[in-house]
Each structure stands twice: as structure tokens, then as C-alpha cells.
Length: 238
Image (cartoon, rainbow, N blue to C red):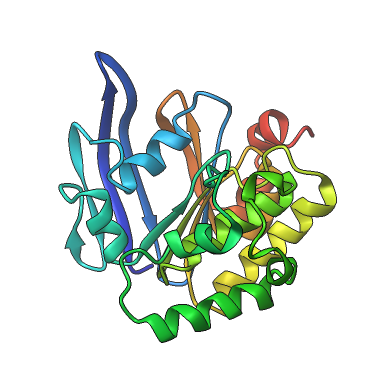
């Protein structure tokens, strides 16, 4: 597997507390990789480290042959990495259109930005009639789709998604799952998916990592982990 994206032996501290210990992960171009684990396992910290929002103490992060762990978050976005944060974190007092445009803040190709707005409306049709609506008035599922669309407005080649199904109804979760596959297959975007919905994450991904207390406890092909007795017992309710 080509190392399109690779994290090598990452350690992260919050004050004196070690949040990640010797975490290594690899993503091949065009893949969907899942990170699963319980609350507090270090999943969000891992994504924050990948995007420069949390500085690593030791280790290296490489993307397309370039080391990126010393770059600022905006520089990392400029290289083609976008993140959909946990809890959506849209701008509640802005309308939907302005939320989406915030995702394109580094771009200068206005005509292409306009075209991408149209593409987002094709992917999530409700956006077209809600462009002038205040984002805080949307349902949770609609806000999640705005958050995904905002990240896509940066035209990423690698999309990091932190708990996109959190708190959503099963029907909306299925729609989010379909959109992840479409983004990966149609837009040719690689995806790192953090999910407590482990069954969905393993179904969507080709490879997965299981985090436990800041360490990689298991890794491998998703179809193999689905049949792993410990994974089934601890994460799949089987």
C-alpha cells in the first residue's frame, strides 16, 4: 500500500498527560480508513494532530511525500486536507451560503467556487432552498451536511471526518454514509473516518485502526476486524 498519508510514532501531551503514545497510521491514496474506539481513546486528538490543531511532541506526519507536522493548520488546508469536526461546529449566526464559503476562504478561483456551490446543492438538494437561512435553524442532520459541504468547498484530496453520525437519526446516518462513499468514489477524495458507530465505520472503510487509551491496539483490513472476536465483543455488540 502506498503511503499517501502516514503518521509515524506520534506522541501527544495535554500539559503533562500523555494523550497519544507511539501512534502510527498509513492511508493509501483513494482509501477510506476508519479509526474506532471508546470515548477518551484518543480519536479526536489523532485528527487534531493530523491537521496541526494539536502539536505533536514526537513523531512525524507525511502527506504526498511532504512532512507536514510543523506546518500551521491553514497551510495544511492549503495542501489539500480538510476536516469535518466533531459536533459540526458550523457558524450558527451565518446563513448556509456564508458557512459554505468559509470553506473556500483560501481559494481565489471565484468562478470555480460558484460552481462548487452548485455541486454541493446537487449532493445535498436541501441546500439550494436554504442558502439564505440562518444555519442555527437547521436540523442536526442538515447542519452535519452543511459541515461536510463546507469542508468540501476547500476541494480537499484528503477529508478527515470526526464522528459524522453522532446524535443523528438512523435514516440520516444512512444518508451520511452514502455521501461518504460518493465523496470517496466520485470526487476521488481519500477519507479518514473517526466513528463510535464502529459497524458503519468498518463497513465503509477498507482498513481500520482500533485506539485504546491513546495507543493503536489493533489494525488491519476492515473485513478482518469485523470478524475479530474482541472487536465484535467490545465495539459491535456481538
